[in-house]
Image (cartoon, rainbow over all chains, first blue to last red):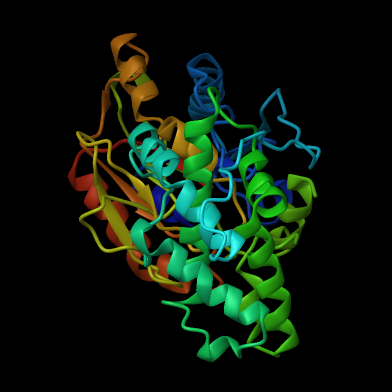
Length: 226
Length: 148
């Protein structure tokens, strides 16, 4: 971010950079930077709140009046205490012969399709695994939890990208089951802590680590704090 | 765990060092053309997704709203962007600022890069200057940079 700001300024374009991580801003400051203490992934702060977003933009564009490099802090922080979690009803068991995670994923398909319609697919599945193939992708991680070596489990792509599609599938389905903008990380916590597939992903991550898979293969299956 | 724990994973990553700080004085904002440059790895569905360590950029058509994120890191909340694209690329807000006379014009095109790069030399020496030149060619005066 800061690198791009320097390069664009050198090319004759004035910049204002929004930043979420204070230490990065201070150690490599952009020419004009507004540190916003907001959760990662939300540089404008509050989804669905145009008034708040305009406040951020006003503070950012005001920095264009500065006649020298400047860093500032936005006057309101958005705290995340690590506990907020979405309350979404999970589908009842439909196929008792299927693994609970796979049965669950199939049961969420209608909600996922609604979520895609609402969000225009901005964060859904489909990067390497189409929505139709999400249950099969989950099955590969189930196999890892059951002892199959990760390289032989049939993960249909780079593990981090497959896991991104699985998480996106669930969080997009969750969007359709609530009537408000989720608090930051609330749908991720719901996915990892409340769903059968979340449990599989966490267990598969641990199993891959135990199998001594290369660190990037297992570490990026979930957010790094897990 | 709270968001601050995830920020702590990356806060010490070294950035590029610049011996001098380039600084451009813009025209009055009410006369300026404004573009968004984001490191959220956004792209249109019909464009190539971002590969891991992809230092290139994608040209975003401001007349469209079908932006998807190709960021490979799991260390950001995606639900905010899914719910409201303006959380990351605030083009609707910029349109409103044009209507209010606060900014002159919203650029027709915007740029997306992939954040979470461990080697920024290619961005500094190649794709960054190329993107800047492209936006200058489109008459952009001011860039708002947004991360995820």
